[in-house]
Image (tube, rainbow, N blue to C red):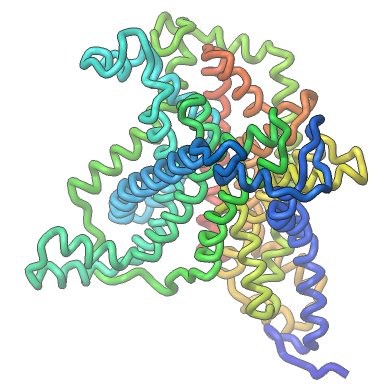
Length: 571
């Protein structure tokens, strides 16, 4: 007979605790294992298989694809892939360092604002992060187009020919990637910046430290863990970007992510794509392990009063310009009659009228909302169950580390690599049922795979904030497990659950990469439609559609921010 144990106010046995934890966590972890973890491990096998002339994968071992990915061919050594890899590493490094430098100063400025404004400012940082990557890239295309002020100034000083745009170019790719990575960097660094001990800065000044030494030893050293995490969360995703290089750089500026997407898309060479994906995976795994083992600082904020300087204020303004100027250009252009670029004509609402009369577009809206709604409902249930299991039940340290690592994968892994894993898993499952063919069902499976991680993180934060005292009090009053769940746990978790659901819905609404690689013509969503339309050329109807999506994102992010703020202060 199992020995009784006391756990959070009740008498039970360890087997019962383990069984309860397993029941709650199994659905989410199995989902992540089948669609995320195992496909990543399968890349090592897939890259050694053979591709038939018809594009099918055959169970014949060969090292051809792996050697080709490394530049070794029968004709000799080919530098093309290594050049693309070098270009990718350089772009990711430039993106990370530039974004972190700007984000650190911006986070310092936000920390110096009154407490009542900080949540709103952080929500404003999160809005571009939750805005679809195609819309953000398309916004830069509009802002850097031949009729834009930037292009005219560049032509005037002789950088480009008159009447041409600033894209495709390396400059446009770097600008788009920095803007895409900046919100991640700010939100990550802020968690360290808000706990800075400003008395150490004062002590460094009292010891006659120069401004540089005070900055490095008084501020940067304290925020070191946050800066390291920000580097991982910007460098690793930047390695797999393919939308920004595709739209802002063109074929001359492709990166590894573009090659991977091509092999799993139009080229239908999965073994070669798997070999290229392994390169990204090798660079991704250290980042996942770092975030899994990292422990954020606990406790209250440090002493002293945060202070702002001209530099931090200027950085905050520059961040606002980088994040919102392109999006603002899209919104402004949607209200003018000129069809080309930013050449503004007479004010009009004609593009919105055309938008709402487009029956085909409403079909895309229906697909998008259906996908977001169903996937959010599933991920909210799975994420809440997993969060309760991780926070309210005893886990072996190694098992908890493995579960945390699985949850970090959707957060850190490059979008294209994550989508490739889903595609591989669906390709395997397709052997057993046509249900896993590209379409709405496959898209839902893919979206839940990344949504569940974000829901779990939000609900776990709520659980940590309310603690176990209410559960212990309920058991002291002889509450049953079922009564505890419905009358105590779920009401206390409601703000966190709703916040996580809103975040999951927003991420699904604006997802492009997974939708693009798992959709069928009948299940096309708005982001996929926008991408296809942008490839054909810019149009004012796209301005209006992007503005509507941006407005929806703002409302959802603000709602999630209000709920998450409630979730951090307890019931």
